Length: 223
Length: 249
Image (tube, rainbow over all chains, first blue to last red; front, side, top):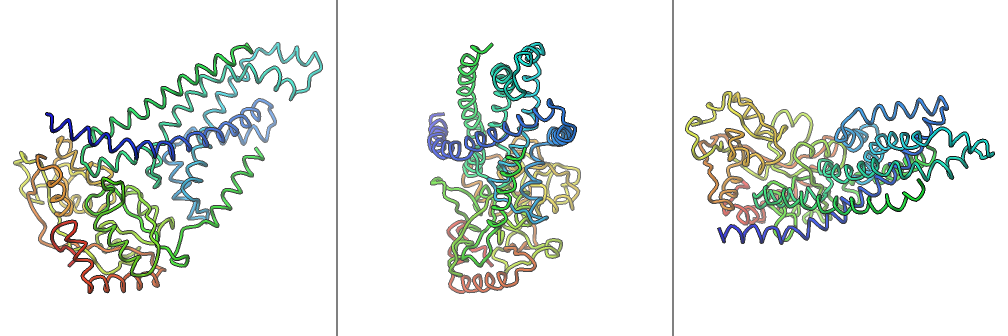
């Protein structure tokens, strides 16, 4: 038993450094960049649908339909392995960021749209009566409240994204989970490594949950 | 929407210019698994090593090129290679007629024998012919998977050799086929693993690097490099480093 414990302990100690490195260099940056871009796409799509301009509304709906209706892994494969066939050879980071942002954009746009619509109709009317323009109403009245309402669903999407990044190993990217798989392949001890990877994700998600609670308190003053 | 469109277009343009490397810019990009010990794996120092990896490095040295590695699970490697993400693949690619239609092979650098591996307590499977209707664990597109299907086995898909062995040990698969030297290495690492080689194929399987059909120049250069490495005894030296025997011919 002692011998076995020592072996596992050694393995964990030697794995923590490369796994943390991959977490900081790939998993977390990819999550943050994709989520930020995805959010921009989401807000634009949500506004396009609410504003009810026919052409933009249709484009947005087709986009959401495609990206919510196909698996993320398939989207990654099409962007990275498929597009070179028609001459668009993206490097792995661009491919991952594009696929992830578009995927997040489709999901988050629903959350953003619901938050905007959940601000009572009467407030729009009141603001219009005060002589505010459409953009002014959005910025001063609707957005502060919608942000607070959208925090829980958007945090959900952010946390999902962090975990979904484990799919990028299949397009030659070396994220935290791939690092764990490599060590598992060398040491032939998958259980230790996968449990360790799970702990890593769990720790990061715990931090994110705290952060979410903090943000919610901060934005609650607008409601 | 415009901003996003601009971002997309510029990133796409940038990436077209940063297309997959060829021999021209002085580096060789090699695709390999990185999870296939002892051919291609990350050692304790997290450096990519292995029989195939060291041979790739030696080839690049011989040709005076810098080397880059792209790693992916086997089922994604050929997709990556087809999409122009690498110049060549060194990952124990068996030479088969079907693959010859699509790719050019260099000189072979390994002579391998297929080993059929089962759990130590398995009494049912005595040879390849007994695979009929049994579950065999393989990466979907590997040559070993084809071989198992030929004997009528049902394929359980995994992405890499170490996961396949794991399934056999935990009885979620009855058998797996792979290079015999792979198992010797595995048993060295895990002497208590309840596994046994029950049969070896008598026919040798040759493995080589693959290059795109239209890249004859690279093919010829790699062949020259392999010939010269063989002559100098470098291939033998690398083989002995990993297997304690010469599997290069």
